[in-house]
Image 1: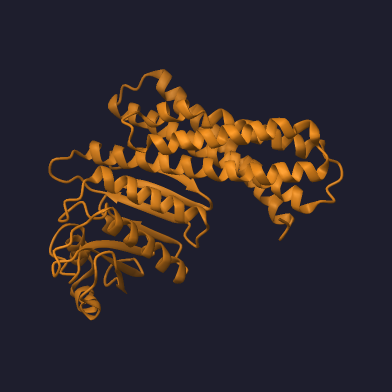
Image 2 (image 1 turned 60 degrees about the vertical axis):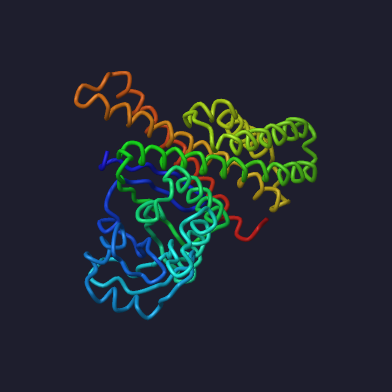
Amino acid sequence: MPDRSTDYRINETTLSVVYDSITRVQADALVSSDDNYLSMGGGVSESILNAAGASLQEDARKHVPLKAGEVAVTSAGALKAKYVFHAAMIDYDNMIFPDDAIILRATERCLQLADALQLRSIAFPALGTGVGHFPFQRAAEVMTRTLTDRLSAGSSLEQVTICLFARPGATTDDVNLFYERAAGLAAIAQEGKSLGLLMGDLEAAIRRMGRSDLLDDIVRLGARLDDAGAELERSADSPDSLSEIEDRSGIGPLSRQAVEISSKVEEGTRDWSDRQAEATVHRTILQGLMTQLNIQHGNLNKLEIQKAMHGIDVPVIIANSIEEAKSEIARLEAQAQETRQKLAALGGAG
């Protein structure tokens, strides 16, 4: 599945999972997974060194030794990227090897550096899973949760890519599908959480506007979104598929209900003297649409996997379902863009 990319939206950033060498990915910064002396002696760091040239190692020597979880920034040599972010996963001086905290710290630091440098794109490998032998299943959960948490707060980054390459003992499909599932679950859980938080703001706005007819519905929806978020959090270690987890949480119907209720407020309000309330309504609509978009991207990904399994003899029902999913994504994106324009027109309201 090297030609397939799985994409999710976190705030204004696209989070993608691809199966390819990180040296072939177009990004402002490439992240290298290495030891505290940046020896670049194996795995992804060696691949980056081979593509960048000897000047990369000369530049890297200025920053050693690092501590586990720290990140050094260098030029990118012959690579098309602007920078290489060298993440220390192993500390040979103290015999420290990758764990949850190290991967989380390095991932967060890379995002902080990207924002400080005002970068638009960054590509990560599966940190710590090569020479560091950290389980790729756990790395997927830590990385995707850290990425979605950080990106949900806003970032200069427009594109974040996780580049996967199969390791001994794990097939391409195993690694790729696990990261895709982890990214999808983290993205949907984060967008659903943001939607739930907005319901409190929407309730306050509705009270100020005197729309008591919708208060009960909004309060109930907020409680159900809290329950859905808790279910998504509990399911991080579940063996169930992403679609099964979505169905169990009810996040899909709830996000649609949030858009429907907010749209009723928008359509039924003639006097928008309360610009803060107007902005809250539009933000709730947009958040509901973004949650639905991530669900649809997950659905499309599942269908694309089914299509790949059939080779050239793709059943009509799968082909039609793929087209329907793409059409729904296009509809939701158009509606989201329209809502963004309404928010932009309000300026700093809310």
